[in-house]
Every structure is written in C-alpha cells, then in structure tokens.
Image 1 (cartoon, protein in one colour):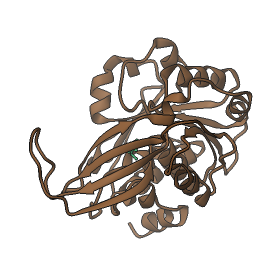
Image 2 (spheres, protein in one colour):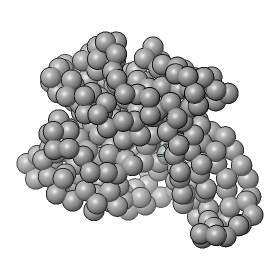
Image 3 (cartoon, helix red, strand yellow):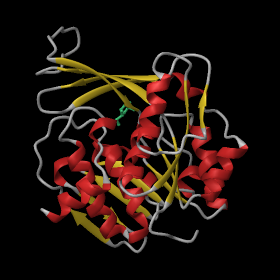
Image 4 (spheres, helix red, strand yellow):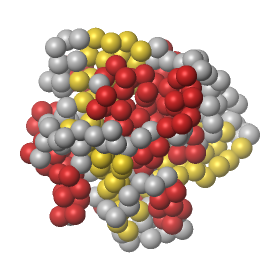
Length: 292
Ligand code: RIB
C-alpha cells in the first residue's frame, strides 16, 4: 500500500453532469402533471460530487472525466476548480455534457434520470490518467461511465498499490474480476440488498442507511455502526456522494473515524438544495462534530 499522509491523494474517475432540479410538494405518479415550486441548475454527477466532497473534506483530488463542448461545459469545469479539484485529466469531447433531470419533493426525497452525454465517451484511459491512478493513495469510482473503463482503472490501481474505493451506483451486476480489485465498497441499503453475495469478496463494506446512519463490515468480520447526526432535511441529492467523498478523504485514519467524518459530511449535505452546492468544507464538518 502507498505511503499514507495526512492529506491523501485521491484520483476520482467518474461522471460530471448538469443537474436540472425541479422542486415540488409531491413527485408525480406516471401520467400525472403536478405544479413545481422552484427550479435550479446545479453542477452534479456522482463523480464530480464525490471529487468535490473528497477535496473539501481534506483530500488532494484529481478528477478524471469528460465534459462536452456545449453551454454547460464551462460551468461544470468551474465547479471543480472553484473547490481546488485538479482538472488536468478533465477532457472535452464533441457533443453534449451529461445532464440529470431531478425532481425533489417536499420531504427532500428525489427521483433522478441521468443522460450520460460526454460521460459515455470515457471509453479509454490515457497515459496521464493511468499515471494519476498509479500515483494516488486512493482511486474512487462510481458507475456512471462505461464499466470497462472502471474495471481497467481498478486493475491498474491494484497493480500499483492504490486503494480502490467503489461506489457501485447506479447499481448493476459487475464482473467478478472487478469486485476482486475493490478494497472498499460504499453502497446504500437498497444497493446492498440488490448486490447481496456479490459484496462478500470485498474486504471493507460500508452500507449507508439515510437517517439511520451507516454500518461497516471489515475483513475480519468486525462490524461498526455509526448513527447519523439529526438535521433538518431539505434535499438528499448528493448526500451519498458527499458521504463517499468524505470517507475517501478520511480512510487513512481508520474505518471508525472515517465513518464518523463521512456521516457528519453526508448529514450536512442534506440541509441545502442541490448536489455540489450543499457539500460541506472540512471546517464545517469539524464544527458539526464538535457541537454534536
Ligand atoms: O448522486 C447524485 C447525482 O446523481 C446527481 O448530481 C446527478 O447528476 C446524478 O449523477
């Protein structure tokens, strides 16, 4: 394993989307039209959200991904640079950027449709991408870019002693070879249920349970349970991403501390509208833990 420092270097390989967010008291059922209460355009995407969260929570992050050449591209890039995430490996491809149509109801719960756009063009890793993965302490991936690229990145990370943290979302069946290269999996309870025994070979599994906190299972069968701080929920979009990014930033301090840190970060992310706009800083997470 690479030498651990207080500021872990994290390569985040994943998606970046413009989130088109409509708020409404109640989400429509199929065939129904409801009136909305507001609209916002907020940079998002699981990869970008996790990169920003990991950087703000104390990591040194490089983002590996793609935007299109459309009107959204500059703002998506700026969302990363404004948070000091490294974008040397963010490429621009012809065509639209990824977008997500999101409906948030009065209880803060959401429904999301992602149209991949430029994210689907992440079909190959460049030499510079591979070098960034090899040099990092942690590789952090999700599943909003082509699966073969995630598998190749995990294989390269394993070969170079880079810890692989996978958030397998949107959930899908994965090849055994990919699971074999994953050190840490972060899933929500629905995903844990769907993946079932697929998670067995993974040394460290973290299951997030919304307001009920998170549980951890280690390689020796050790279990930890972390309650979630009580907060006033406005929007849960990106809360799982914030938890995952913060977990990656704190992983070198051990699972117990990482769960505490990530739990506070994830809870704070539910208190504002939008994905990237609700991600707390290191100082905000520390303050929340101190005043608990
Ligand atoms: O996890 C939340 C994210 O999922 C949103 O930002 C949206 O872009 C989708 O990727």
